Image (cartoon, rainbow, N blue to C red):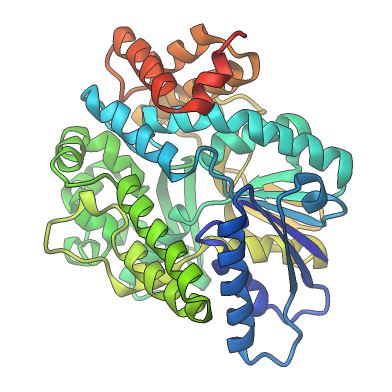
Length: 450
């Protein structure tokens, strides 16, 4: 089978290839095409993958790897397309963050106005990709990891329907941490999770037919062993009666998050930009050590994830740093579809009737069963109270961004910024769009009328 990886020069691509190296099934991916618009990054990641394959010691032939900057060549006749694009690169991400922060608003890659700016410039590219897949590989399945994952999955589904499945490692990690806190095997535990990408709640944790989440919520000591327990505090989690996705920190502790980011020497995007420039330069200078350099930088990157939410001397748990997750989900999806191996996982899929109150074609993040016919969302208890209100508001904003990007409407873009719960005025919404147009060429080009 052929897998096309879009954004093939991206730093996290070796995680996906590593999962492929561990797959020894009869029907597996045996050919990988890396697509990227940056040939130097492509070359660096190609070297990393070659050294990974050599170091694997596997008796099974590793998947062949080719690189290309031709999108049509990449997707033609693919069985699966893994999308991990970053339109505007990390320079765009730093602008996503800084434009908002300069206006006193939270600046973050996917949550808040930064995520909306990212979505505006990414939706048109994602739709173009979907159209090329429809033309050149109509039977392919698209696994989307491009952020904002829920929004981009929904935009691509307008072209390809449910053959686009969105993945994220955040809710998977949450469920695993909750299970481990109770001394349970995550593989034998089911996670009752619902919401949107980066905006969901773990509401049940079922082991041997019993929901053990209330037991965890009633035990502050066990909660404090989890990232979320330290992030939100046991009292707040007990009040909620659920465990929020870590990204809800930006909603529940907006002032604290904003103060921490403003008080930092650099934003997350600026840190990654500097780190990755150093990594790619190091590989170019010392190509024979590409894999070792990638391993070292990956550990540094993972350890600093969401640093603004932790105390200055607090480090991430080793299990969180090493856990990964999304690459395993991608492999499981491909295995379930290609070999009809039924598997359960948390995915971004079309809602249908899963979460009452949301449109049928809205993409939600919920437990699913995957088989040869794709992903099937499982029945879920309805969201109520403030989670439902927050999900409805953010989903409305996401759909406004998709419409603004596809129709090139300035008015809809301003409306999206103004209505986001982390933006506090229409005037600021207008200033945000103006700021992003001034700093990010891809956003300005979307609305420029030549």
